[in-house]
Length: 55
Figure (cartoon, rainbow, N blue to C red):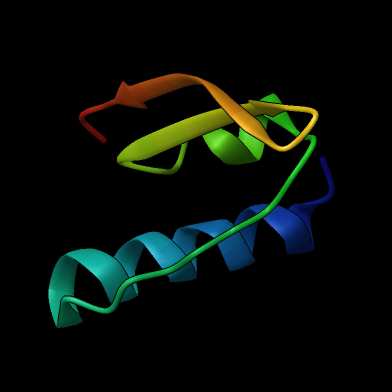
């Protein structure tokens, strides 16, 4: 994970928490996924897991 990528993820987090902006991210990175408040795992286009988190 580059320093720039971490800065972007922190910016997304701040925008969501302070401005109420919804961010939809599609990623293969478990590190980036952990920034979300909801994580959907898909397999062959089908939701296999729906996890709500606290960030």
